[in-house]
Image (cartoon, rainbow, N blue to C red; front, side, top):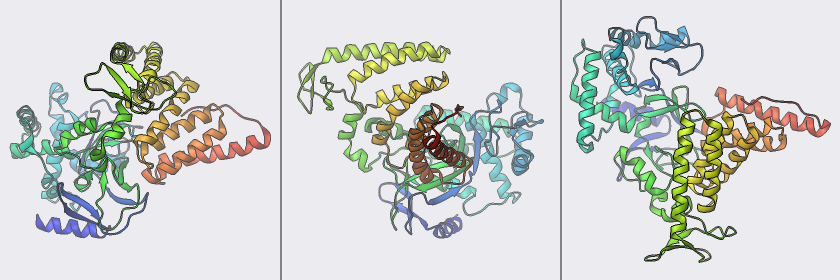
Length: 485
């Protein structure tokens, strides 16, 4: 194993990186040279991966593409988009296929993504040990073995679940002998080391285990970002990273108050001590507190000890506690009703109620409130679905100032929101605005996503089209209809 560790260090050294012991964090990755914004720090194919949706054929098992899918005729579980993807996967899938084909239909329904990921892990280890498929210094089971499982910190109920899942793997692969305790430990490793594979617009596609990238530690103010091209994971610098500086990414959604972020990080068994978590209170006040009763004031309310009122920290105007509670209760009741309508497909009616909720929240919460932001994000999705582009644009624009407050300047969420805004403006023939929004989107996303993916080529194409139309409109004053895509 030491030999593999030395080979990994050698491989990383060639990329300007090193594995190091970070005080209070364990292993981490540090830069041994300077990285600049947008520069690829490291990219890696998954050791194993699986789509989120099994049996329904929503994506290719190898590349995660969603078109031209065909089901494996033997196991009736796996899907591929091309013969090339099938050939690349064949040595692994050949064993997996036999195991899954032997299962009853009821057993096949028990093939959750996590179970399937473990089956593939067991089979890949076997094939690499037998030298049927190659291994390398960044693609071998020793790297998986070195990952922290935190099994001693897992509660009893979860341990029982891991043991049950290990027994299920044993039922799926009865011809193989393996250590059930080790499988249970590996399930625990999945929980705190596997990554959600997303499309360029950050929609979840599947799960992958990237043992080298898993060494990178978390920060709520990261200096790098993890994105995916298909199932290839790519870490890019968001800001200059100097020699001997630790590389960090975010494991969680960072548009949240400190308490929520710390709660979300519990599954990783550490307490974040990044500058944002240490500082905490000022940002949290804006993100979660109530606004001043004076609509012209941008202050937030503080609860006075022993008083049944909230007082603005800026202008000292008080707001009755009972009034705040009454509005909060009304929002909760409306939210439950709107959510139920939305889940049952009554999109138009749900949209009307969410609009009422937004109006109440505008009076209650600070303009940078995360609660208000989430309501507006929901309204954006609703009116996009209803193809009410003008209303959708209004809500899209309303989210951007908050995104710019809660995310670092080069964060994919900011770029993607500007992209959506630009496409809506383009569709509504607000061409100058569209050009500005698409330019902002490109400025951010070229840093977080690079420039070579199909997604970025489409963005650059829309940007050039917008530039051309602005020039055309300035010269002729004419326009044409468009379709949103």
